[in-house]
Length: 108
Ligand SMILES: [Zn+2]
Image (tube, rainbow, N blue to C red; front, top):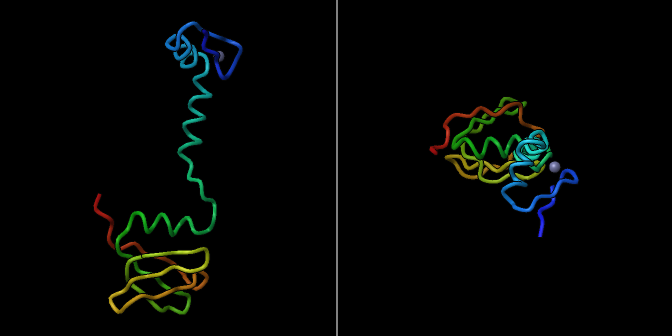
């Protein structure tokens, strides 16, 4: 039984030798693979909301009409975000948002 290199025609009799071969000859491919894994899967506009809601517990949302909401992002879709404020839940259309200001970071 032999171990075949996934990148070239090389084959080795032991897994260890193959791993060594890959780490020496195909270093670049390996690093590329790692980087691809790191990339987030989503590519929608909602990504920034996901990032914010993952990292911040409390945010300030400022809308184009200068209305301000403060709260926690509890849900979001492609077009709206749901904010839990002190006065209850608010759905805000993303296109109405001027900017989101993170206030309190999440404890890790
Ligand atoms: Zn190879």
